[in-house]
Length: 229
Image (cartoon, rainbow, N blue to C red; front, side, top):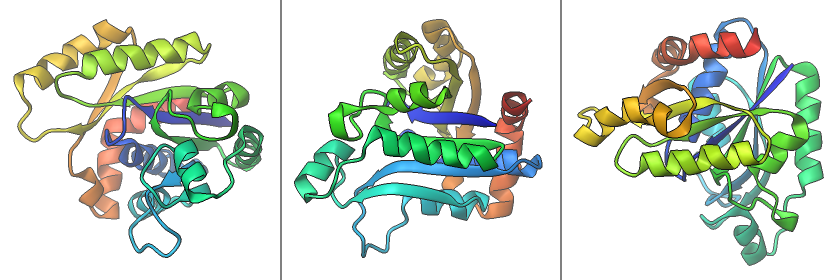
């Protein structure tokens, strides 16, 4: 059984679409997959907007679990304090992931924001989850100017925590990439010391399930096969 934590260099870089693509590619390869979103923010209980878990299920057909939800679009620990709702506990997240791991070939854990974002009680982060469950980390990065710094800092933090970084994925490749974006394809591996695995086109989240599956298999199928042996 394998656990992979999907994090990002910041918010809005495409973590959810990449999580869905990984789930779709692995499931298409005959593997059983589960997705865990420890904390969802920015969506109220009666909101009709899609949660990240809803997006993953719509795109990949893979169901997931959400452990906590807070209405304001803030870091989870801040959103919890402001809402008066209980904060997440690291032990509860670890237990939930390990239970899924017992019955699935692959468990994908989608973080919130970047690796330093505090998710709950005691200020634990996605890296604390990864360390506790023995997972590696996939970093989703932006394409444009600034991503070299953001990506290098993120990978350095992953390594400093004693966690393996499995690689980088650009979560939303522009239709008309700028000079910086094109150059970053070569510079990201040099700046971070890890492989740039794939670039997923922007707008992939609007594809139907069959189109998305084809894209997922093309861009991330080889990675998921390697990850799962």
